Each structure stands twice: as structure tokens, then as C-alpha cells.
Length: 163
Image 1 (cartoon, rainbow, N blue to C red):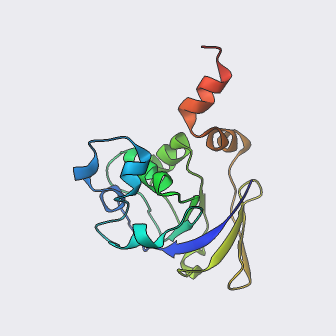
Image 2: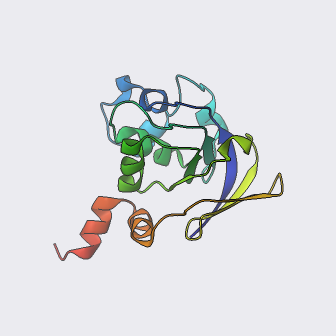
């Protein structure tokens, strides 16, 4: 699975309330949540982001409370993938469960806002076309790729049952 997009840069310790403020947790509609994504730390982010773009962040992305709304808002905005130095474990699980691809690379801080990236989720290869650099992550295991391609865990389960 290949993803191409422009990077939007965020720092360390971006918490779930930074991603989507608690005052917007009155809906689970990804598109509505996406309209408010990162509003408290980057008010113009939703105007700058385009469908297929990528978030690049530092360590501990998605820390804070356990809310599926955070990856849903990112996905609802049209962001195709999040790359970070590390993720909070609950965010990692929620991202996969909602169908949002994520990858960890130690060199995430080298990616700059506006860099054009090409990501191979299967092999874990991230090419920074702008800088001419290539990074290697562990990629997503095949079963996680199937969940992401299905649109999330619930859609994957539905596709495997005859209900």
C-alpha cells in the first residue's frame, strides 16, 4: 500500500485534546470532527491540509485521554497517514481500529512541513522526495494493513461475517 502526500509538522507530546478538543466530542462523524482537527494548536491547519496529506510529529503523539475521536478527526480531515517518533499506545490502537495508518520512525524530526513524502506501508519505507532521504520503519503487519484497508476494525469484522 503506497501513500503520497505533503507533510504537516507537529512537535512532541501532541495530546488527544490538542488533536480534537473535548468540546467537540458530541459527535462521532469523522467529517465534522475533521473540521476542528488541531484547532487549539494550529488554528489554520484545516485550511492548509488537503486530502491525502500526512502528519509528521515528534515523540508521544496522541498522549492523553483515550478517545477514538482523535484519529477519527485526523482521518475525517482527509489526512492519509501519521508518522511520528513514537505514539501513545492507546492512540496507536485507536488509529488502527479506526483505519488510520501510522508509522514510527526515529528520524521523524527530520521531516519538515511541506515536504513531499511517499510511504510504503507494507515495507515501512518512507521516501522524503523533497529532501532526497529515505527512512525505514517496521511497517504495518499484514493483519493491521487489512484492518486499515477495510476502513477500521468494525468494517473488517463486518467483511468477515455474513450478518
